[in-house]
Length: 217
Image (cartoon, rainbow, N blue to C red; front, side, top):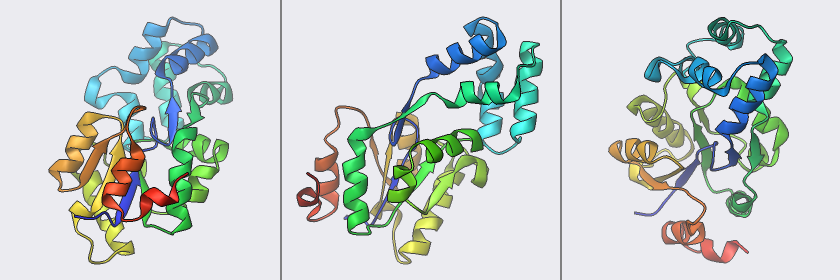
């Protein structure tokens, strides 16, 4: 089945990031150990503050307040958000593929677990992302669903149908760096591929989009 729409994940696909850098920078700002910071953000597993934020359950003010309450410190707000945002760098390797898809106006979008802070930072810092993928963004905090839950993939399928009305789920390709998110997409009938540094993305796309190989240099 040929691909008629492509979704890219944001973190570690379009833009690389370092969780260790986040923990180190926040620890420096608030003056407490990395371990306490990690628990503050990611403790409680499925109901962590970070997941609640990325799911859109809480806004930026409540997010800041809850983390501060958990660590028992209240750093300057701007310094706090700078520390958690400045952890990304553009994945230069993928830009030629975005450029090639944009050149032929191939239907494309972004499907990501993210909060408004990380989304805003990445789109401001790496404008090429939204220049090459200007629309069809399925963001967890907006649709109130997280990968690998079925609801976010259903939202992605519905969005793809607004661009390609007769599209089937299997005609949507999704690239993500986590196997659980790939499997969640596959379970919804979407064609999903695990993205990593060693993947031959030219081969993946050329196999699904006729003539694509000749458009990437």
